[in-house]
Length: 401
Image (cartoon, rainbow, N blue to C red):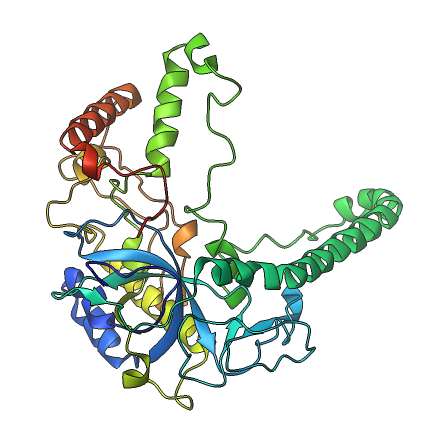
């Protein structure tokens, strides 16, 4: 089938275009650094589409799982061991023999591949001039896709038990140290020149930071939406409660109509379904290499943004159609930032993960009333939605093929 955007549950090859990711800055330094970045082709599994796709979009956000040819890289600090993998048939080897292979609908062309646990990445897949043709692509049916989580369930339980044991151990150590801490506190507090070291601000990210925050970031549902105490409860309060509910609905972005100011940090990739045209069993890179590329380009984009804070962020569609557009947030001459100031040495500044970046901050000149902003957002949303015929109005689903 030919589609304007890729379907999900497919295996594909991707490669990042680092230069295209910094073109909007028109920054010679960023361009030179992007050109120097060596990018590889990676075998990935398309887990989910994070956008409601439109044919006019320049790119589409996806969550992908890189495929490996070796066992999982261990992460002792996170309780992850090398046997937390699922073989892809015709590969049937598992270190403990407790997990049977995943079986694609078509024969998988590589005999040595694995799904790794907890290695998903968020990317932007660039739209092509010609449709994506998945007629001969390798795919998992819905049942096999669900079985990935089922097969990993025991491993996730092991990880949960690992962290639970750490919590219990820390709690026991804390309880045993209460008495000694209380008796020692008067002496230590009066000792001259002795003070506890300040907490480190913006600690450098590790591989586990990015992979864990990927499932806990802006794509996760909000913990609580105002007005969910019961049917009709939002009508009992004042107007403030109604505005809060509307704001939370906009924040969920169920219609894919909000402008994402952090999208420039996501790798922009080209995608192909012809696996054997781009890779062989011996040339499939490690998922860790993909993660290193993602961190490297995020560092380059981050530094370019610090040098050029006024440059508009790239839009996903040519008309910049958005419920929450730049006009709503930025006044004439105002500057938004990502919640940090430029350090003395940009290269030493840790790269913020896209899920940890604060979307918009306004300077003192951008002064407006919150109620007025909510009213404009509601008005624009109603106007945009009325223009959509019923046949193309999206349902309340994250993605439909």
